[in-house]
Image 1 (cartoon, rainbow, N blue to C red):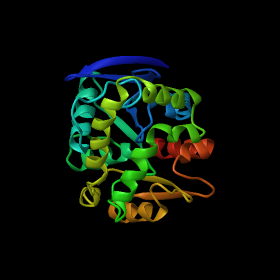
Image 2 (image 1 turned 90 degrees about the vertical axis):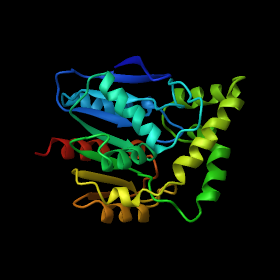
Image 3 (image 1 turned 120 degrees about the vertical axis):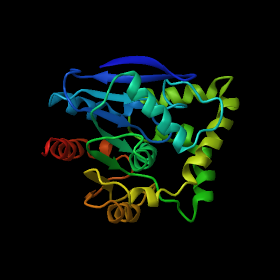
Image 4 (image 1 turned 90 degrees about the horizontal axis):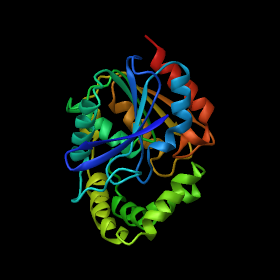
Length: 256
C-alpha cells in the first residue's frame, strides 16, 4: 500500500493505492466526515486479496489532503473527485463509500459526474433530518475528537488530535464548520431516485448517526438496491463487523 499525492486545482490530494493497476475495474473508497483513507485498511487488504486495484483518497479538509480555502458543498467535492480520477487515469471503477462519502456518490452518480459500475454504501448520509440543526451543533463540537472514541486506527485519532492542537487549526476549523453546514443541509433524496447503477447498502442496526430507517428509505429510493442489516453494529459497520462486511462487499462486486 503506497501513499501518493496529486494536485487538483489548488488542492493537494493525498491517497492510498494498492493492488495491480491492470485489474479492471478499480475500487474507489470514499471515507466519512472527520475520517480519512486509512480507515479502510482492512477493506483494502480484502480487495487486494482478490486481485483488485484500490484507491482510497483523503477528501479535501481531511487526513493528509490540504484544506479548502473556502467552504465546500457536495458539488465541489464531486468536482474534486471527478478531476482526481481523471488525473490518475481511472476510467472504470466501483465505489465503496461511507456516510459523507455516500453523499458525494449519490449526487455525483445522479448527475453523471462520476460513473461507477457498482456502488456499495454503508451508513450512507443524504437525507436531511428534521433535527439537522441539532446534529450540526453536536458534530461541530465533537468531530475532531470523535474518532478517539471509535476503535478505528489509533494513528487516525492521533492525527486529528494533532490538527486540533496546531496553531492554524482554529482558522481552518471555520472553513470546515461552514463546509459541514453546506453538506448536511442538502437533501439528496431526489438524486437517489435517479440512480440506476447496481447498489448494495450495508447498515448497522444500531447506527445512531444515520439511522436504520434512513437506510430503509434509501433502499426504497434507489431502484433495485439491496439492503443488508448487521446486528450489533453501529455507524462504522466495516469496523464493527469487518469480516462480514468484507464478505458482502466482495460477493457483490464479483457478481456478474
